[in-house]
Length: 128
Image 1 (cartoon, one colour):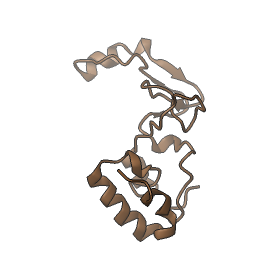
Image 2 (cartoon, helix red, strand yellow):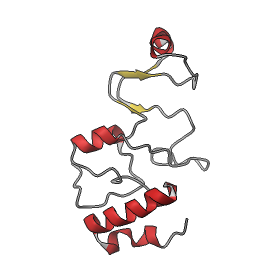
Image 3 (cartoon, helix red, strand yellow):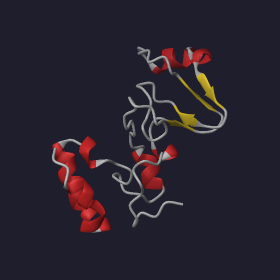
Image 4 (cartoon, one colour):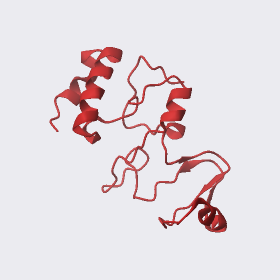
């Protein structure tokens, strides 16, 4: 479905390539509670929210890739193992302006090599 040589639109939800994505039939803890151990977290699994059709489990607020709410922010968090399994680079769905300065340099270098200058020109015009 995704071609690593073509840059995706950044307003599209990457679904299974985002850390917050829950696959169909999964469930997630939406409470934002911090647990002392994995055992404690799993013991509380009755409180998890089911996602019969899959969906975003980001509990930090609405993600702009799925919501058009005025306060929505881009909550995309790369699931790097899933990206690697699909043959996609770590930066495939990333917005440059959300990266740290060090990662921006790496993004520019690797994205330019993969997509060329034209594909990242909008990102390059934005200053950190």
